[in-house]
Image 1 (cartoon, rainbow, N blue to C red):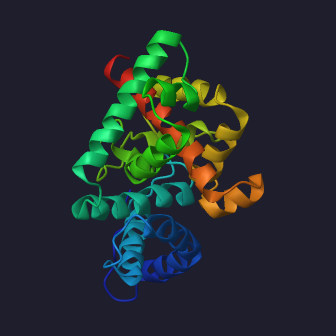
Image 2: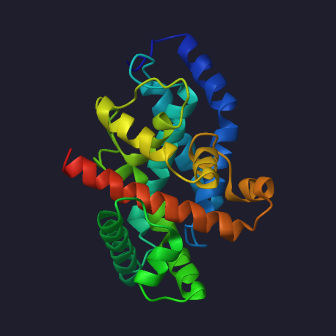
Length: 251
């Protein structure tokens, strides 16, 4: 339950300041992830202000009986605040959104046809694209794919009971999971789906969403380019989004 302020000397204010300082590295990490998706006209200082606003909201609304760790919950709320601002600016062109929609539809059709998540090359061939053209397509849809997870299922970013894919991923990749979502069956289905991912894709997904690492850091660990890691992550998230939406509509 949110804490209430008390007139006069307020020990809560001291706790709040300490917690904000403690989680400033998380704020920095999230701003770094989102920075390239915002226009250059958006100042980094404004993004930090938004991220800290999300952090304070998380601290005020954190309930250990309903949420995972404060760090995991704060990460979700910070991302949600930045994502709301990104949606207002809407840097994605209508053409890019249409491409993302077509890509998800293709993935869904291939999964129905083959009875399993499609490989990147299968999607590329279905779309009749060259390797370079498919790489460019993933680059075009990357912002809307990776940063739109909170609205993938039940878009209630202002609710403590939001059940977006990002929140379920955070829960489903956690070994000692504390259920964030009320729909335990949904979490189990996604945990099973994540377990079936190729090892590298599963590790990259976990590092990015659960361990809160940046693409550059993950690329160094795998000794691959940041662009290649981004491609793997984007494809993985697209397949999970498609699956998540299908089981949310047809549980």
